[in-house]
Length: 190
Image 1 (cartoon, rainbow, N blue to C red):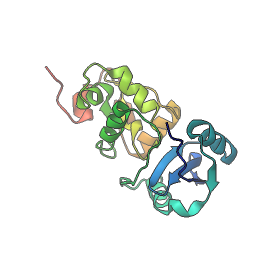
Image 2: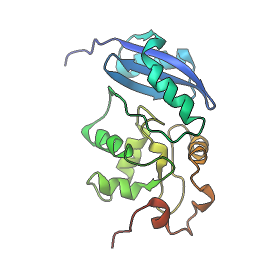
Image 3: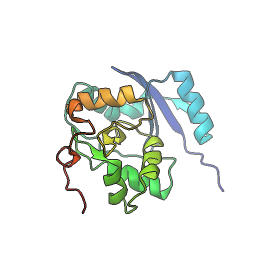
Image 4: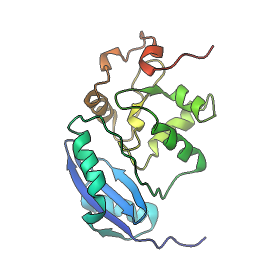
């Protein structure tokens, strides 16, 4: 297997959640890591991709603008480009499907599993969510348990709750007593 020799540019950007690490090739964004130090992010990139990151903020104007607007509560979507350096075909299908979940709405792991063509693969889509290399931009935080619980989040459930509140998702409604159909925006399968 040939070693990837593309340059990997990186920087950090301050957000209300703390600094986020950003990495990109010349083709697009590869990584967004929440609450990270520059040194920790460089170590992560070296260890996970085998590439020496190059500190260079010039490649990140669009994503920085998106993040600034997003954290002001603006309803926007990041349209890439992405150049993801990780992911199985299944994970990439899950991540592409996450991009279809509108701002301010949530979907269940069940919905996600059904939509990617693997009904019942709730844990697998949960694992794919956890492996999402561009959190926030590919909105894995918008996936919740079918019973109304928040579920997990690689950045921590506190961050997931914060992001959903920023998007004005009615968190008080996310309880087991809620009929999820109305909140999730789809009809339950028979």
